[in-house]
Length: 472
Image (cartoon, rainbow, N blue to C red; front, side):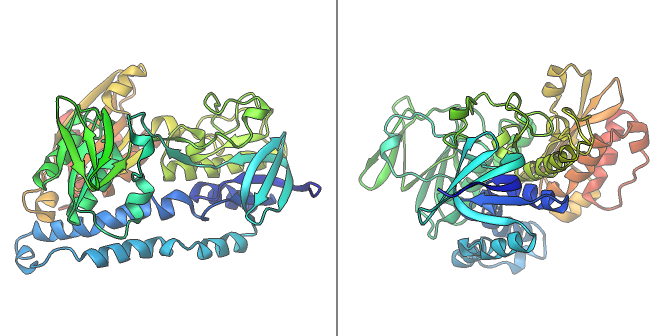
């Protein structure tokens, strides 16, 4: 094996988060090797947020057109399935990462296409596809940007079957006649609606309710729409076993009932992809690994960092990219001695928003957009929290879609009189979210927020109605 090559930083994983970590570190003057065994650009670009939203968008656009008098009369056809799938594929660049590779090289980052093992302190051993190996020593940091992997439940019979994960569901080239979705989280529900609108007969089997991380009023709007569109949603239902019989999957869901479908999607969450990369041999348990707000792994000697899903805090692409930027800045600052062991909250090096201001959107139709804490989470954190909510019924919503249905909520810290959480549900409410994120991060007092006048007639007028409902 060759001698070690020395660089400032080794980043393992070239998804969107790893790219951000590497790019930011190079901008700060550090030399970086970026390692990827699959496609540069990662899960979001090829198998998650980009293709899933591309599958959902045409159906939402068609429904929006049919929701406005004058436009609905002009809409005479249904979705063109082949065009939808081709458009989806265009957003994945046909699963070709050459343009991403060009960006990496243009940014001054060294790309290694290889499997990586953390083989010692500050040491990474690579095995390339041709079998050759290389070893790198990182002067300042090894950054784990290895993403996450599906969590597969221990359902009797499942391990022997060729089921779909979200990768299969976002990259499929044909619409199945029927699809059973096990899991009522964001990915499962989004893909259930997407494939139902493309013509599949879809059944969702959820152990609890669907979209349970959101307030019930918001998730109920999505549930009602799914059922109105012909999706069978079984809540509070367990999948006891599954078998393949006569070319179909047969799920035992209890009380003598079964669900039969041509394809089966298992979408029951994800967990950090940090096992089997050498940590165990270094005495680090991946399941117990914790990182501080700069991303540095606690108790690992100061050279090992995590970003994105590998950190295990918030499994969202945009939040991982945020962590990546801050972590790269922290590594660069420590390389010059300008940052010590800890970083202050809301500084350029601490991912404080991970715990108080995480924006998230479910791109179903209707959408759900939420940032910060629910009222229950706020109270569990010791905050004297109040809740203000109402239906979205303003001039802007009435103009946007006939018979608009939506819901909005603010969670207020009564001691400080600032917003600590906000949720919106309804058509295109994702565009309301950043204002709420800014209000929470900036800790804008309610009496000052009262002077932020929403333009008329827009859906943003719901902000005025919420503040009036609160009592301003």
